[in-house]
Amino acid sequence: MRYIGALDVGTTNVRFHILDEEGNTIASSTEKIQLLYPKPNYVEIDPDALWTIIVNVIKNTLTESKVSLESIVGIGISTQRGSFTTWNSKDGRHYHNFITWKDLRADNLVKEWNSSIIMKILKMGSKILYTFSRNKRFLGMSVFKFMNTQMSLRLVWVLQHVPGLQEAMSDGNVLFGGIDSWLLYKFTGKHVTDISSASATGIFDPFIKCWSSSMINLLKLPHDIFPQVVETSGNFGSTPKDLFGVEIPILCSTTDQSASLFGSMCMQPGDLKITMGTGTFLNVNTGDIPHASVAVILTGKNRSISGSSSVNNISKENRLYPLIAWQTGDELVYMAEGAWNETGGIIEWAKEISLIDQVAETANIANSVNDSDGVYFVPAFSGLHAPINDYRAAAGFIGLKPTTRKNHLVRALLESIVFGMLLLYETLCSETSFTYKRIRVDGGVSKNDFILQLLADLTGLEVERASSTEISILGIIFLTGLQCGM
Image 1 (tube, rainbow, N blue to C red):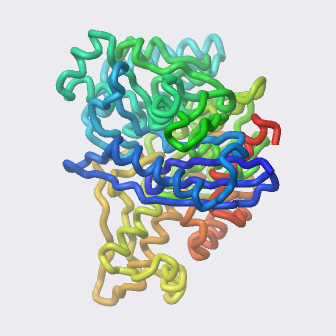
Image 2 (cartoon, rainbow, N blue to C red; image 1 turned 90 degrees about the vertical axis):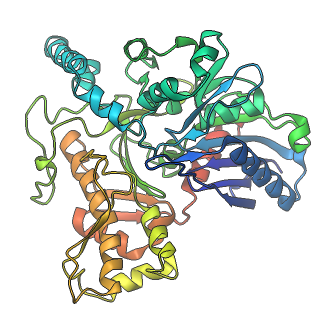
């Protein structure tokens, strides 16, 4: 019997599974990641602590499985996107903690760049070029906006504020990468990243499939710090023998949402899934064509659902982002994405402040009342994301009154999660021409029946819940298994 290992490094947890040739989980381990909040709007992860967690989770799973280490033919990796660090190319030491995708320290830079004359000129020039060429690359640039979830301006912030980093870069001793690239470097010594991870940085051009020289030059970033971009499946090298007792080939590296899309079997253009984890991630397979919104530029109108017009009242900017889902051999698949940061974190917060005792009870609490009694929750612990993109927004309850009870507050919390998903879905309908019949859902929050029923009611779509919430693990297994012939 041969086995495959699947490592998933999320925002909340690190998970490692070992599966056999029939797809059965032989053993698994999970350990929680500690997010650090050193200052308001700062959200970090200690690389040394993360490395310790990853090694421990893999070792614990290997021990629990009792399988021969030599029978493990390979492992695949999926990681959270948008979180990065820089490290020394000579000794591997990091210059700062991982700055995560939830971090807002570069918000002032985001605002300055988006309102700058340079960006206005670039967008106007791109619009003119698209008018004459009909090239979607220019269409995408004509509605481009910097976002806090992209690495680009947080990297600019790092170069401006981390002591000694500029000098080290001048000496050519600095490497940059997301958690995937850093982890592959720790395992193999190779400075690489897969194409799906690169496409989520905000510094990679998904239309021509390489690092964007225009963006790098515009932001005055050094060219030599970026990792080599490779396919999603392939020979990434092997883990060192002294780490786990045997060299284990690494055969796949991808992003968590790409793994989830693959694991959800969203293989055809128009296939749609929503992952409900730490955040909400809506992804649709767009086939071999990168997404570029046509709703605003070509028609000046937005297509809505069920007579709803909520998206029409939001700033008419490109709200879904074109990403590369995976590349395996000759097949390259794109996806469009909309993200809403606050999902599972909202429910965990409710537990931490003793609004609820157990996460599993929230659906029953919400269903115990007919409505929220006019109470709404603004899910903006890190601002409001696409399609609103207001990072100054703050979280809070609205509409509290003497008749408000705990059950109303819990219902309002869960409703806010679905309202965020609805905004993303309406945006998807306005920016794409696909016809949607069902939404496949995964992630820990997808266990909540109240959330799924409300999502089905508001979208009018069939909501299909996976039998397992570990869909990203399944996606990694599929991609790794295809690479090693299992």
